[in-house]
Image (cartoon, rainbow, N blue to C red):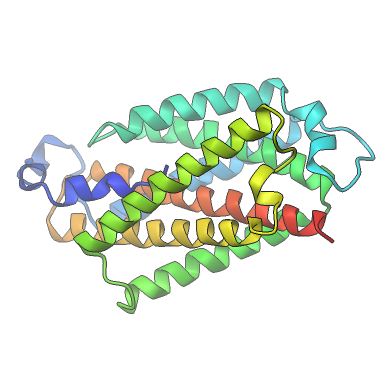
Length: 260
């Protein structure tokens, strides 16, 4: 889940009273944030490539994710990376000042998961990954533009809406999974219905808004002189939002291809 909980630190005076000198690298700056982002996304991309290589998929699959998923859904790479990324995400999320090694380990685990899932989709829908990656870059760029130009103001009202909308969407996604598991729906479940594309677009917009809040938290931390170690928490939040956007775009593209 994206780093919407960052507002809890941003609005907590006690958090900013922490003495930066207890951390060896001083206060949080744009440079420390960029360094954390470079390392996190660098590890993510490398591990995604490794996950792609070691994930087996069926050959000559048809244009349906369910066909190739049979051979890869229970692959060792996917299962281990999914469990590891979930555990590490929870550990990092509950810490206000996570150690850099935890964020790096999460990047590695999440990268393996991204690579494994991406290869499964690519086997069923040739060319879908490059489209999803380019679309994700466009959404991230648009989010940054919207934030920097002040089109969207990140205030308490905005953050409350973001929190409620995120919880509601996650609950909807869990219900969808249950409906697919019990056999009420198949494949993508409710996302494959006539309302599915609209739901996916909402999820992508939600991810973009979460990214906007992440950018705001970075600026708040820098302006308030937060400890440099908080840069890794911010990098973790931005990474979560970007991955959220990527997966939502990937599913939307797959559903659109199946509907043709």
